[in-house]
Image (cartoon, rainbow, N blue to C red; front, top):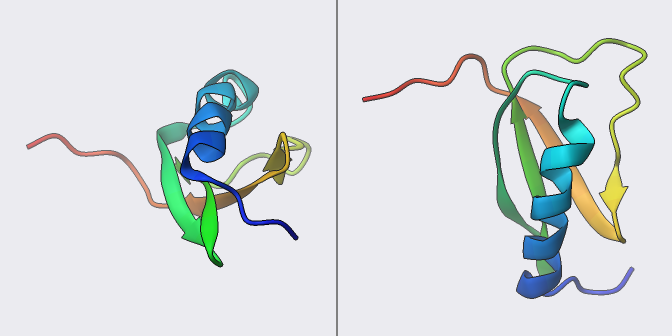
Length: 74
């Protein structure tokens, strides 16, 4: 597996917004370290439906999904 640059991960993060829209209750999308490189981190409010078919990679960039609950404002 090749090391993903910060710029590649940023571009994949932008694509993730449309790829996850309507498929899961997204709370936030950011970046995370994956090995020596970067990946996309998608935080969900609740577990996705079993048939949601969420991407594991976007343009070769790994996607990490975590259910974190409802977002909060301060």
